Length: 207
Length: 98
Image (cartoon, rainbow over all chains, first blue to last red; front, side, top):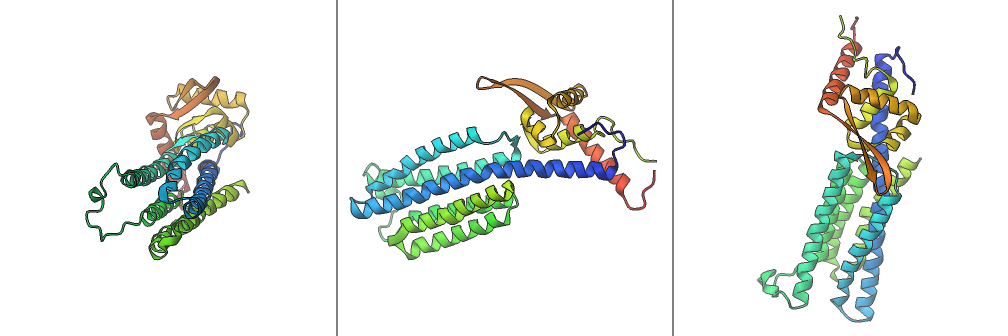
């Protein structure tokens, strides 16, 4: 870009619009691969836990979710280092906070249920009535859908909004409807709510 | 009569830099260079002009062991940019003449 004393008002507005759009695209492009990475992690661990649970023991294999968080975090750090330099923006930080909140809530619920499963916490402190059935997959997939849909609204991406809604509602009801196939529901939710939107963002901005 | 446009912002490169910084809390020098397509030398000169006017701050720091130049827009820069856009709107109003 050259110094231009004869810049017209129209051209000035065009420069402003182009610069803001370019910046938005750069931020969006970098948010695609982490979504795919976390989605693949959830799918792999869901299917792995399902297999181990059915064939080699019981629900204790759910402890592998904590291993997934560690592997996911390490992979995310590697992706952070590899991705293009993008500015710190309010939008980027907000998306990060949305997913961090999702992680805190789901991780917290998972931890409490694990402590109950291990007998460290009494079950009564979470579910006072033994007739109440708590479906953690339903809760997590709903949170998943909410976080994904909010992300779609923040970056104004219709595909992510739709995927988030489908994953959230679909996952919530499917996990209640098919309690024996919860891990498959989780894998499907990760595919719809994370992998597909991530790939869409990545390839849309690559072209 | 139209209000004159801020001469510091009325330049393609400086305007592009300010537009990039407007939505960012901080942006690194390589990012601005890539987005504007400017040469490093020219960009440095223009960033210095914006910094001298108090529109941006340029912070030299390190990212790991690599040197890193960070640019932030200041409240003065933000106000100047808003006024610039407002003046542009006046210019573009239907039937406007200076």
